[in-house]
Length: 305
Image (cartoon, rainbow, N blue to C red; front, side, top):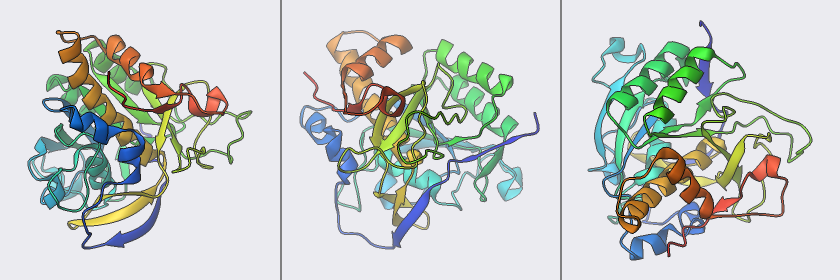
């Protein structure tokens, strides 16, 4: 088990130090703003982000980070330092749960809590054991959702077993489909793991016009799609950046799930199982005029009734 997992390749389109307050288009495309008006922001839901860490001093993430742990060799393997020197993990965190306060941007679920699990180092690469340890740690902390915008072509039993254990502990595991797509050709399959495991929620990417992103993987295990092209979010050094990739689509789904969990627990007056929450997620999808190998069940519309 010597192989590494890496960030799904992504594109940094722009970086800025300061930003006038805005709600990114992906948040409104999911209809998250309407869910907020009904009182649902993901409050009380814990999302574990397994990534490159997070800028813990970012003003748009103030109050959202409830803890974290470093599993990499960065900072001399100090488990208590989980800062993000790469930027990717901070971008993911902002899309999930950046605050509603007028600073920078707001994420999909601004009431959700974030557990930052740094399993990819400053180069964006992580040993398989680091990833597995992070998953197991998330299970031990009884999180609701694990969000992973990483992957590789190798199917590894130990990684699959760790994910099965998470799902069996009632945790929803959301993963990027991968960015090796061939311009929307649904006749060819591109498999990246852990996204291609049947037990995870595999996320492809669409743009602001709901067209499939040319880089988005196609395969039989894609569950749904979310905005992943030119996504504005928080970034390292307390800045902001616009990035593209299925890495950016994945946290949209993780944030939407946080809202759905909060809504479902109130609506059904009980905590539900992982499969029941998944069924609710799919209920809030809308199919596009695309192959199911590209879109799965479609894109999310949080039209909470």
